[in-house]
Length: 171
Image 1: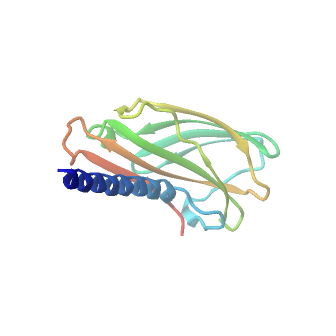
Image 2 (image 1 turned 90 degrees about the horizontal axis):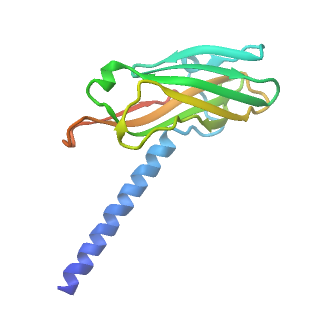
């Protein structure tokens, strides 16, 4: 009986280790390394003005955002909305990691900041998700690039009712 308990404990430890390592892998997946290069089509040039207002869109989401500030201090505000083609079937948000990378004129990543909106874990996706962040822009920044990774669930408990989305535009 005690041997069976020890085997079950080992199996549980192996499964837990696998889940933790898999989760860490997903978190690192959406975090480009400093020095990596963004694909040219994903680069968003920051203008010379004190404020940039724009819209960024992918197959699953639209982000309307503004970046303001002079010098190194930057304020980011935005509104994230997921498209109906995702939310009509997968209406529960389990995880979402939204990142913004500062890039230089060659498209190389200078730093990465987390701009993930606040949400209730495993809750229905809100119509709009507000984002407000402040951070320091690295010297030499000429543009930005967005990336994300998310897991969405359907209304049923069927394991097939799970959808992972990602946008990782780096070479």
